[in-house]
Length: 279
Picture (spheres, rainbow, N blue to C red):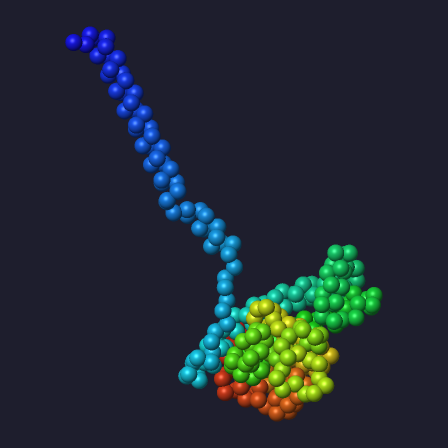
C-alpha cells in the first residue's frame, strides 16, 4: 500500500500531465484557427489595391440593334464624362491664371511651369513671353467636347464597337499613327501609304488621345473657334454646329458630317449632353 506522501506525488504527476496535454491542445487549436480562418484584413487590402479588369464588350453578339446601340453608348458614356471632367478642371485652373494675368500680377515660377507644360501637351508655341497670350491660346483648346459628338463619332468609326481596330487595339475613333509598328496595318491601305491605325492599351487611353487630337491638331481649329464663339455668346455648345467643323476628320468630308449629325439626331444623343451638363 502506498503511503500518503507517495499518493500525493502520483496526484501531482497526473495533474502536471493533464496540464501539459491541455496546453498542447490549446496550441494546436490556436494554430489551426490562425491558419484556416478567413483573413479578412488581407482580403480587404486586395480588394482596395487591385485594379478593376475592364473587358471590351462583345457588341457583335447582340442581335437586337437598338439594344446594341444603347449598350454601346452606355459603355462609353462614363469614360467621356470622366474625360470632360478632367478637361473642365484644367480649364478652371486656366481661368484663375487668366484672372491673375488680367490683374497685372505675374505668375509664380510654379504657375508658369505648369502653364508651359500644359502648352507643350496641347501643341501650343511656348516661345511667347506674355502669360495672357499663352493662357488665351490654351483656353481655346482646353475645353469640353459634347458627349453627343464623341459618342456619334465612336459609333461611326468603330461600327458600333465591332471593327477590327476596336477589338484588337481599343481604337474606337479610327485614329492614325505614322511610325512603323505603332498600330495595326489596315488591310485595304493604299499602296505607298505608311499610316497605321493606332493601338491603345485601354479605352481610357483612346478617349484621352481623341480629346487631345480634336483640341490641339491644326485640322480642327475651326471646331475650336466655333466652340469659343458659342462660349462668348453665352450659348450652349450645339453639336450640330460644331460637327460642321469636323469634315477633315474623315476622307468622306461632307458625307461624314451628315453621317455624324444623323447619328446624333436618330439616337437622341443631345439628351446625353443635357444629362451630364458637359457644356
